[in-house]
Structure formats: structure tokens, C-alpha cells
Length: 139
Image 1: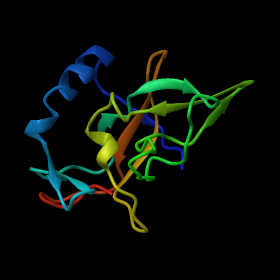
Image 2: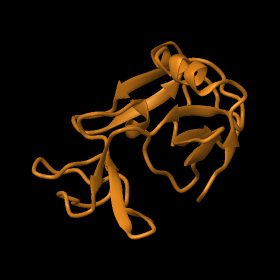
Image 3: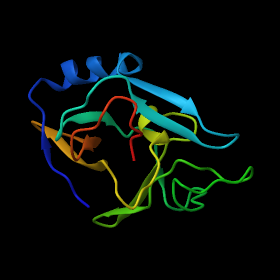
Image 4: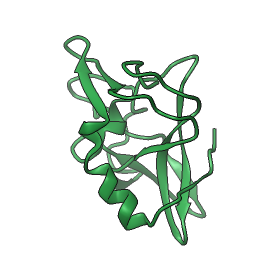
């Protein structure tokens, strides 16, 4: 699913706002493997929530599955490879990333990752698909 959002502020301002994510979101451990991301306040629909960040790697560099993959020897939290002309790459957020790497999959998601743009700057953002209540898990 491709989502196009238009930011209403400068990219510098938006990135600065992301530094205070822990004032808006909580990461809660579910069990020994899973974590939930929960808002501590009501989140409006169609709101960019955060940026998917990590190390940009070529597909030949230890790609071992989707970001949902978990095994002690594997690297979870990576995107599926994407093609840009002749270059295939993925974002590996196992060691470097934001809270967005902990958002779990769902058959009825309330968020989606997609392209956001501010001027010429392109980002892969997590965006709310509908209003999300306080304490409701991001999926």
C-alpha cells in the first residue's frame, strides 16, 4: 500500500518533533519477544507519526526475510527489498531505528507505511489511517 502524505511543516521542524516521540507514544513489552507501540493521547486520522529509519543496505548484504522475522541468528526489523532502477536495497533497522520498527502487522491495521514528501525530501513514514484512541496499539 502506498500512502502519500503532505507535511504541513518544514522537514527540520518535523524531524525535531520526532525526538519527543516518547511524550506521545509508549513502547510496552508484551512477552519475551514482542513489543507494542501505544499512543498516550488521541491520534487524529491521516497524521504522519514517525519515519522508518535504519541503515540502507544492498540486497546482497545479509537479507534474511521480512521485518516480522524473528530468530536469534536472523536480523528482524528490515523492510522487503525495493527496486529503484537497477539498484535493489532494503532498510535495516535492527541496530539503528525509531519506534516505528516495533509496530506490528494486523489484518485490520490502523497505520500504514508510505511515502511522505516535503519539497524534494522523501521519507518512508508511518501514518495513521484513522483516529487511534489513547492506549490502542498501533498496527
